[in-house]
Image (cartoon, rainbow, N blue to C red):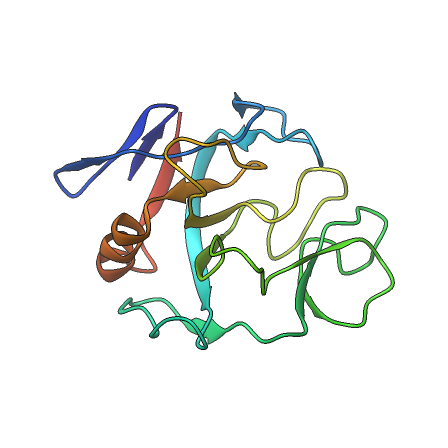
Length: 161
């Protein structure tokens, strides 16, 4: 999967994509809003079972529960890991009121072993609206995300240029 700021090429198709509001970077930092350049994998997925069916994919998928969070605090020993509420450190709710995380994939950017301040939670998820910037993630139209999900494998790579 080849990712540029204007789109993605994957399995003979071109798909629009949203990237981070900070553009693309070779020096990712926590909170910079940038999408890290490099070669990454989608490791596992999550989905809102109360809103949608489990996506058809070769990756492990876990339902998102009401207490599911993701640590984004560089000083937290669980930095860039899935955690459960209540939680005292800075974190992001995976069960969102909007539909952005109805289906998401966790990339191996700074995961599963995280380096503090190098950025957390580079997910592949649904976009808010066409090409609306993310906090660093890659975001797609919901139908395109499901099309991708059905075709990715544990060997699929994201080449972010």
